[in-house]
Each structure stands twice: as C-alpha cells, then as structure tokens.
Length: 130
Image (cartoon, rainbow, N blue to C red; front, side, top):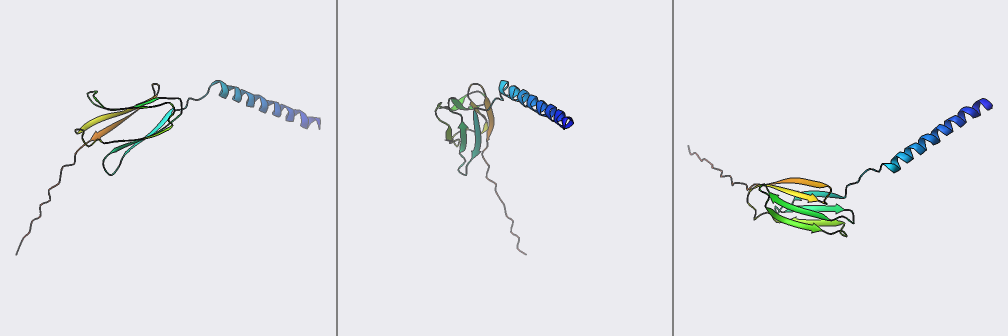
C-alpha cells in the first residue's frame, strides 16, 4: 500500500504545481482583444454598407478618402454604441481607388474600395440571307 500512495502523492503534487503555474501565467499575461469588428459589402443598388460591432467604451472613426487624401466621408461612433450599420452612396464619386479606414485610435482596419463604371457592351448581330 505504501508503494502505491507515494507515487500517487507525487503525481497529485505535480499536477497541482503545473496547474497553479499555468493559472499564474495566464493571469499575468492577458491576451489583447479587438475593440471592434467590421464587415463591408455592397448591395444591389451599388451602395457601400458597413457593419460595425464594438465594445462599449471605445470611440470609432470611419473615414473614406481617395488616394490624394481628400476625405469624402467621416463618421464618429460614440462610446455607448455597440452596433452600427452605415450605408454610403458612392454613386456620385468619380471612378478610382478609395481607402476606407476604421480606427479607435489604437487599432486600424483599412479596406481598399475600387469604383469602376461598367462600359456598355454593344452587341452587333450579323444577319445573312442566302
């Protein structure tokens, strides 16, 4: 019986020591979490839709700029808002590349938006009579 109790005691002591060490490591080194999540897509009408989910207590800024740095859209999302849905009408903007930036001052999410007008395709049919 003594030969069985000593190894069991050592195994339990080793498990407790390892468990406390891992708990101390995880408590002292927390993993940072993102303050916001974003989703960007276009609808059938050609408008840009932005979905934001964020933690309360963080202020977000949403900006749409062109390659020259000119701002076309700026929206501040307050600290108390946790879910925001925005719809941008980009039909009046000229063709080109734009930068959509979402930031809380610490984390930055940048998305490239390219506007391009579809040129109408002229289909020519040839009719031959024999």
